[in-house]
Length: 200
Image (cartoon, rainbow, N blue to C red; front, side):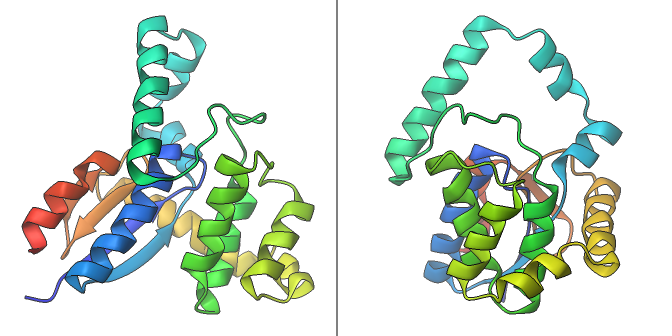
């Protein structure tokens, strides 16, 4: 049976960077389609999952240390360079996620999104800043002035909001969230082996 994986993502998460990379490798290997769904994870946190804010306000030192170690292990495993923490953290990703939608309209979402992830998690650039987004658009092959106008358009803003609301309605609470062939939901980079087992 042909499989379809919906990938809801926000580039502000290092775990999503890992999953974004790995799901594409899996799709290439197992020949399934990825339906990319950029959304704004802050909107999800504000609505259904404010535990992240509580943790940031009162971090558990042992957990913080382990999360850093875990991310380093995954970085080594995947070969992705991931800086922890970036200079600006957490980052406002709203413009970058709108940019993913614009790139999608031009058939360039994976390429643009990869450069956003690399710019923030590898190169320590603030992906909220127009100058960095302009360069990412240019390097993706998008006309930068038109791109910057589009990310401020009402239709793109509305689509990002719709994707965010859709994830909440379908039971999602963070990034990355994946749905296989409908409403079979998987959350997190470490659930990709389960998706492999399902599709193989």
